[in-house]
Every structure is written in structure tokens, then in C-alpha cells.
Amino acid sequence: MATHERATLAGGCFWCLEAVYDQLNGVDSVESGYMGGATLNPTYKQVCSGTTGHAEVVQVNFDPTMVSVKELLEVFFTIHDRIARLFFTIRPSRRPWPSR
Image (cartoon, rainbow, N blue to C red; front, side, top):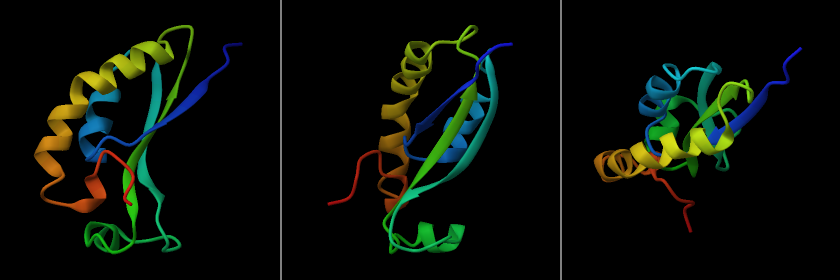
């Protein structure tokens, strides 16, 4: 029985990350959500307003015998800059780094 692992990545727009990781061999599922912030169970509208302090993230569930953490991160850093430049100016919740 294979052991499955989970990686949580914040790289701007979670829809963009989800679309890429959904296509990767060895990835069982990808779930979009929020991390950090002060509001308990925020809505998408609240997070998009930039007032909750949350970042958009994806949780990638994968089979490490088919795809390694290194490969997941190589994909992440290949697409990360484009996503950050495209969306950070539009919405603070899509920032690729923690707020200060």
C-alpha cells in the first residue's frame, strides 16, 4: 500500500495552481482554500477584499512513489512568478508572501 503525502502551497491565485497540479501524474487531488488570517471560516468575498489577512493556498495530495516533493516544487517555481506578477496587483489575498 502506497503512502500518500500532502503539500500546502501558497502561490497567488489558487485556481491557477489547482489547474496545473490537477494535470500532474501522481497527484491524487488538489483542494483550494485559505491560510492564515484573523477571520474564522472566511468567505471568498471576504478574503478577496484583503481585510482578513488570508492567503489563497492549494493542498496537494500526492503519491511520492510517482511524483516527488522536488518535482512538485519545480512545477511551483516554474509557474509562481507569472502568477504573482499577474494577480498580486489585483488582490492582496493572492500575495505570494506573508503580509507584514
